[in-house]
Image 1 (tube, rainbow, N blue to C red):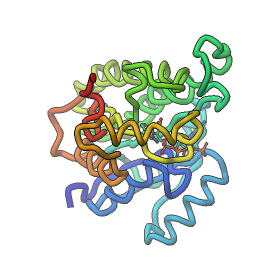
Image 2: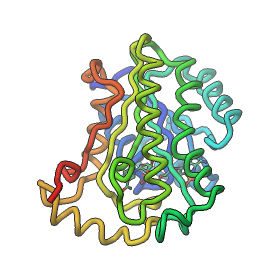
Image 3: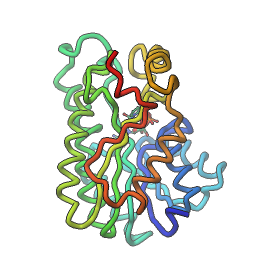
Length: 256
Ligand code: NAP
């Protein structure tokens, strides 16, 4: 029960395929008390059905659109009223125009570029600000990133640049919150079939490339990302902050 008596906010479960759901399941097994936030009402509905079906019935669900600072502030204030303090946050949120996840990067619109940055990178900054106000010292914040922020990945384009921004934000936030022993880290997950991933052109072929070239000759499993999240949110990782931890069956280490 590594997470017993810890209140963890999980942001970004849209359905049962969401990485945030795999993380939530492992956190629950480790004894965490979970609070969920969702964006679209459709996601809220499927989240509530999932929670009911999988025996998470008593978990709090709160709406939160990360494009609005006011909404983020309100969500964490609501969480404070119900749970008083929190010990961790899972930020598993990204979005870009699907038509800009393919073709030439130079065709990215200004609006699409700013939207991807806003939802996929700036949101972690704002979430960390409001979450840290109600977080116990020694807490932990994690986000989900992708190799496409470090290296050029086919069709990832505007999201790759947003992930680079997210990765840098993790380091600056780790510096800000370090004196309170609050840690900020990212999991760089290998490709996993989710709603967001299906938006990237040619995503289905990426799996074959990973199976062929990764040291472990397979794709990462959602449960493996979930277990790493438990580690980073728990007191087993109190000396780790500002890290981008690859959970990708080693794909990132291979050149040719
Ligand atoms: P997903 O299930 O589609 O999750 C994306 C989440 O972002 C959804 O819950 C979505 O909610 C939320 N979101 C989008 N706009 C939002 C907004 N304005 N406010 C609040 N939430 C918003 O896909 P996923 O693959 O699990 O993605 C989770 C994270 O993992 C993302 O950061 C993604 O880049 C990262 N990641 C994914 C992979 C992969 O291969 N799948 C690999 C590495 C990293 P709504 O649907 O309600 O808008």
